[in-house]
Amino acid sequence: MDKFYNQLKENNKKWVESKLDQDPEFFKKLENGQQPPVLWIGCADSRVPANEIIGAEPGEVFVHRNIANMVVHTDMNMLSVLDYAVNALKVKHIIVCGHYGCGGVQAALKHQSIGLIDNWIRHIKDVYRLHKKQLDAMENEQEKWDTLVELNVKEQVFGLAKTSIVQNAWHNKQDLHLHGWAYGIGDGIIKDLEVNVRHDSELDSVYQLNF
Ligand code: ZN
Image 1 (cartoon, rainbow, N blue to C red):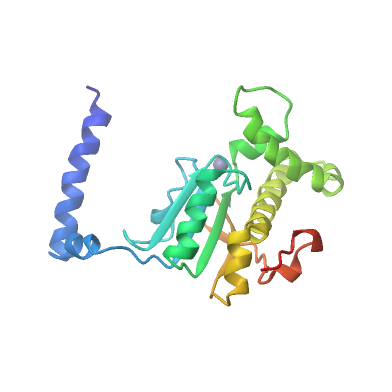
Image 2 (image 1 turned 30 degrees about the vertical axis):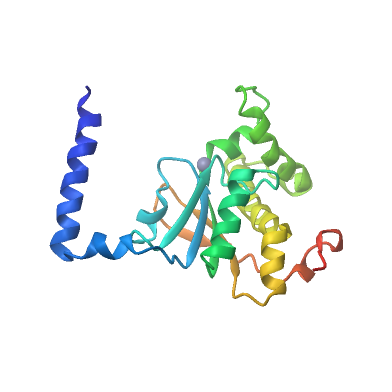
């Protein structure tokens, strides 16, 4: 067995010890259930570990990750996580966190077929098409990539607002806020993109649902 793999199990033992050192009841308390105030929708990228970059402890963040932090409206996995987070856990905040240097976003700017993943990346290409004018006016490739990362996060936040789950929560006056962030892998800093969508009235009318 390779060294790195074995180290993971050793690390776990040390982690348990350190947690118990701080609080002998640490795991006992978690056994009673969870009430995280935040749902995190982030990229699967190994360099963007949800809890770690925001200093969150176990029990504080409900996490969903996929390639390029997408909110694909027919994705049963995402919808199930969202439904459970909003309707059972009653999270107050949903954060879509993208990151600069996202390989998924970069692939969307290119034409090379990578395999099955092309069909997932296509959703990011749709975002590109929506903002083609703005993006194609950029000569600097880095700037274009960074901008598509941000635009993609914003579109995913709007994607959340378009779901029946979020709209129903707003309709029921549930305290639920959507946020879009972009994380810098090179400096560890989070940029709040200040996507302010608080009501379905801010969406194109075709998406607004009556309950
Ligand atoms: Zn990524």
